[in-house]
Amino acid sequence: MIERYTLPEMGNLWTDFYKLKTWLQVEIAVCEAQAELGYIPSAAVEEIKAKANFDPQRVLEIEAEVRHDVIAFLTNVNEYVGDAGRYIHLGLTSSDVLDTALALQLVASLDVLAQRLEGLIGVIRQKAREHRYTVMAGRSHGIHAEPITFGFKLAGWLAEVLRHQQRLTILRETIAVGKISGAVGTYANIEPRVEAIACQKLGLKPDTASTQVISRDIHADFVQQLALIAASIERFAVEIRNLQKTDVLEVEEFFSKGQKGSSAMPHKRNPIRSERLTGMARLVRSHAGAVLEDVALWHERDISHSSVERVVLPDACILTHFMLIEITNLVENLLVYPENMARNLNCYGGVVFSQKVLLALVDKGLSREEAYAIVQQNAHTAWNKPEGNFHDLIINDSRVTQHLSPAEIAVCFDPQQHLKHLDEVYRRLDI
Image 1 (cartoon, rainbow, N blue to C red):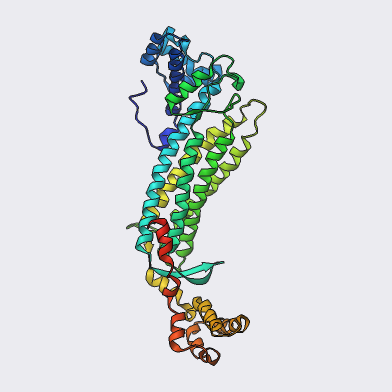
Image 2: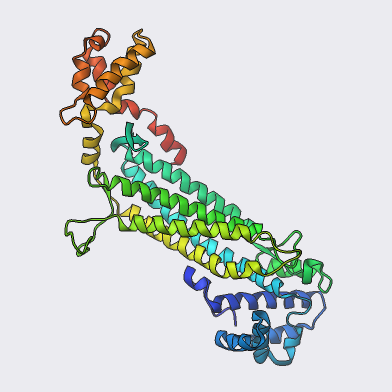
């Protein structure tokens, strides 16, 4: 019954059908383990595997009467299996099925997310390679600081996403935990050997010390990792939004033929995808708070976590998956304007080169305080004035020229001086 279904994409991993499919996988794995240990007839297990099925609509109909989802599911399965169904769920509690099956859903979701993350890594690496030497202004506090390259900015994005890749690898091991230990987790009615065999069949590890549920710190970790991915995507999206401002316009979201930006203003080309990603990141982050509150259950368990997880886990997985698709497409098709980057870099006559002039003067014997005052005065004279030109002020300031030759001043205003160690960063990232 199970083999004829193929693994779907993210949205379908969180359907009722897929959830019930994982429940049945768990029940059958436990039956197989019981048979291997001689607790139930092997023939009965073969019959169960041959006949077991479910109808999601029928499960809902039964649940409307019994008010218990697992009982409704088992009742429906037994409608297909018949007498051999009495061996299903022996010694188990509902959470054995729910939590172990949930682990299967989470592992499958992580596999999809990891694949999408790999795609994002590829497009960022390619774009960073393409713009390795595309010089632009680096900014701090939103103000021009010193020259960088657009590729260097993307290298920072790549390093961050590679860290997420490492985190997901660890998370897959952490979340791949099952629990077949019965009510309150004491194995009173089922052997630990059954748990070990069943989990091995499902590709999971037995929980070290479960209660009636798997402790929710594991699930909180899962959602927090997704929230971190969403936060990084938001960082990239906010950067694109800032660089797309009309008065900056160093990059721009791809604007397709026929696309319209405003119902009122035909000229508008808005960063709508980046804005959408920013909003979605807020949602994923909010889910991290909800699952943290799920950790503190009463005694060996209550079900206050259940209603939260039914919303938060699928939502966080689906949102993060969509965000990865969107940011990958956005970066891959990003419009980059090197001419505007050069224009902005050199506004006010290249004030971004002020530190190089400062250091050159200090190297000639001036005190740092004296050199700083000279350079700052010229930079502020040029600052925010249409005719302001820091370079011209420097080459005409006798306090500078008595120490620095025209050639030495020219070196200070050469952006390549800021890129001499760029290759080291690229080497670390294998770009």
